Image (tube, rainbow over all chains, first blue to last red; front, top):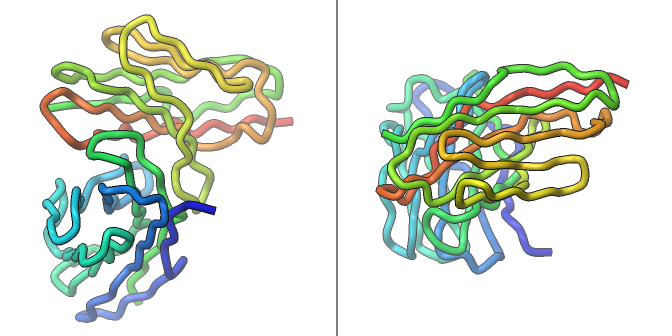
Length: 112
Length: 110
């Protein structure tokens, strides 16, 4: 079945550590996105990519980095510069920018 | 700046008790209003896209409507399995990005 796979489901970060969240899609979508979700808050856009080897900052990019080396993959690295990383992270894709989003099942990141 | 406000924040209904969720928006040139359903610990699931005032879409017990300032998600005779958080998002004419509201948490008691 086509879809978006996020891994791991749960992730723990030690202080000063960088961690990487995986996102893979087999929908042949051009655009991919990373959102952060905090309790009681709307989804906030971290980074998005319209095409391989190109990506743009969203509204809360500080302390995060991404790469888009393959159309199917859009990993997110939470760096040690992100001082409040505990949140639910959602990856999404769409056929083109601004269209209907298809979401993965999310990764819950917590700080040890 | 595009903005989305959802109300109420939380809603409790008895099974079979119909109601509506509200999504008020401010955008320059609406290019799409999206409704999603999200279960706890999972990613949002797409429900509807609406593009112009007067448009309506239905799926089972859910019906979404759109005016120039707001959208309603009507739930008719809800069942406990309709319990979830419902998210609204808009895309304005000047942006490639969706702006999400904070959601309405719906609980349907048997």
